[in-house]
Length: 105
Image (cartoon, rainbow, N blue to C red; front, side, top):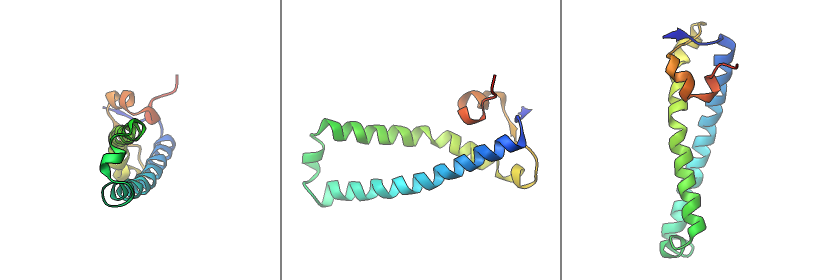
């Protein structure tokens, strides 16, 4: 395990991660309302699930949500170290998985 590049960069990454949390809660609300419309209101599930653009959009929505889980968990795990004023310790392989923490070359 090696220390992360700089404390400032880690704070910036964490702030971006926090912004993702706000976006995630908003998109979750939109998803719930959309699913309610599909199953209980509007034209019904059979109409929407026969639409290829709807299925593609719903699939992309799910993929983006799943892909964002790992970086969000990483940013949340840094909270303790950042509150203590020190740079979080990040495994070398984490830089490859989380683009926001990848060292610039």
